[in-house]
Image 1 (tube, rainbow, N blue to C red):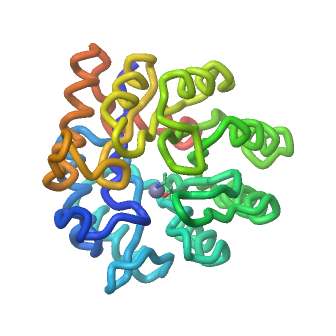
Image 2 (image 1 turned 120 degrees about the horizontal axis):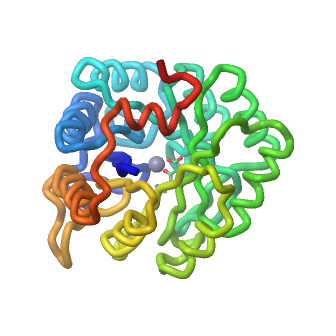
Length: 272
Ligand code: KMH
Ligand code: ZN
C-alpha cells in the first residue's frame, strides 16, 4: 500500500525565533503546503496563527488560509482542532463548522511540555458528535496508551463511525516517549482495518517515522514535529522534511499516495 504523506507545516508552539523559515501567515502556510504537495504530500495538517504569530482559531484567518491552499493545489485539508494550548475548547471546536475534509480529534486531556492540553470528556464527545453530524472525518491523536481506549469507547458510544484514522504521537513531554516499543504496542492494539500514521516529535523524528513506514503506516513530516533535519541543522522550511519522508517511502518500496489514493483510503465513503 502506498504511503500517505501528511505535511504539518506549522504547529502550535514553535516560533520564527526557533526556526526563521516556520510559515505562520496564511500566504506563507499556503506556499509551504503547495511545495509539499509538489514533493508528494497528499494531506495538509493545518494550524493557524494570528497577525502576531500566536495560535488562533479565528474563523476569518482559517477561511483565508484554506482558500489560499485550495487556490494553489488540490491537497486534502485536515484542520487542527488542537489549535494551541491557550485557546479555549469552544473556539477550537468551532473550526469544524468550516467543513474541512478532516480535522483532528484529541481524545484526552494531558500535560503537554510545561503546559496543559485540555480535552475534557464532555467537550470531546460534543465535538465528535458534531463532526459526525456534518461529515468531518476525525483524525484521532493517540499520545498515550489510554487514549486509544478512550477512542474505542467513543466508537462504542456511536460517536465514531467507519474506518478509524489514528495518529500515534510519540515524543511529547507528558505523552509516550518516542520508542519503537511504544509504537509497536499501540499498533498491535489498533482495530484491524484502521489507517494510521506516526507523528514523531523532536529528536527521534527520523527514526520513528522510518519505523512507522517500514511497518506499513503512513507518515507525517514538517516543522510542527521537527525543526531540525539533522543533528544541529535547522530545516530550511518544510520541504527538506517532506522530501526525506518521500525518499524513505520510496526506498522501502512503499510508493507515495496521490491525493486520489489518499481520498480513497482516508475518506472511503466520500470518494467518487
Ligand atoms: N503538536 C501536536 C502533536 C492537533 O493538532 O490537534 C499537538 C496538536 C494537536 O497540535
Ligand atoms: Zn497539530
